[in-house]
Length: 143
Image 1 (cartoon, one colour):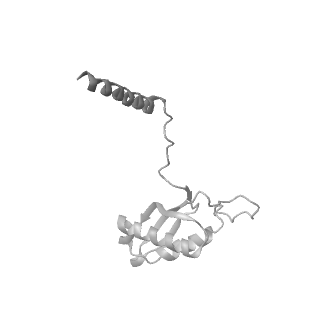
Image 2 (cartoon, helix red, strand yellow):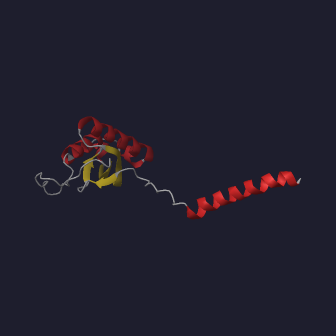
Image 3 (cartoon, rainbow, N blue to C red):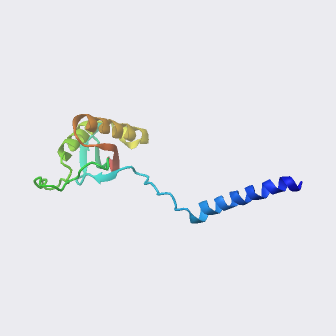
């Protein structure tokens, strides 16, 4: 019994010392953000006609890749009401084309909204140089 105890005690002490180091002395792991990228809200809201005489008023945000440049540089200042994203007019056209004439019920359901967000993101990837990882409708009113 004493022979087995000689092996168990040092192993238990090593495990205890390792746990103490991990909990107290080791640097905490770097926390990662929940959003991988930066969120850019298009500065002007959209007011669009829907099917059946309804309309939607919404604000759209893009989750941009960390490398995506937004404004700055020596480019000319954007027109009034537009933000510093270079290809913002193209993004606005894509959103307008995707949602004009859509059924109101599609935008009032969660599944429908997510469908349009994904559809718009694919169109942005296909038709522009904007490196968006997601499209989000931040505010939305259907009437």
